[in-house]
Length: 169
Image (cartoon, rainbow, N blue to C red):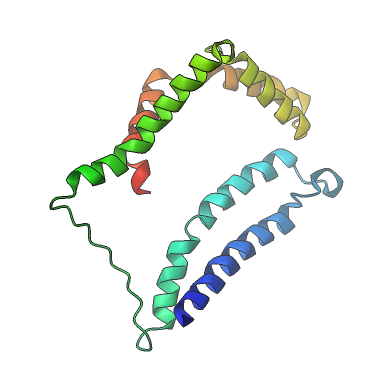
């Protein structure tokens, strides 16, 4: 029970400390009044969220280090492939297949929302950039960049990554 308490204190403490420090440093809750560049501050928050996602791993390792010699903290995980390959494959591929099925179902139910030109999305992104305080002279290049989108090769690469490596992350 002691190890669970240490783990929870570490995982929440580290996560909240990182996010709290970033919010305090950027003034993310009061961007306009603090004179902070709102666009840059909003880019830092997702980065910090990505860092915070590693805090459970860091907390397990620190808990193991803190309790070294006092209490055993089981850490290694060994896959048991013999007789279970189909379940591992299902766990690996099912999220991607369910996502594709969900997209197909959504556009079957709401066919009018399909927007391959992405004009609605681009409009929302421009509104977000304007609301974030991006100066007018930077809005036009930002719009051009948004309209260019990603290349088909990059899209295929993202899809392959999402199905092959992302589940392991």
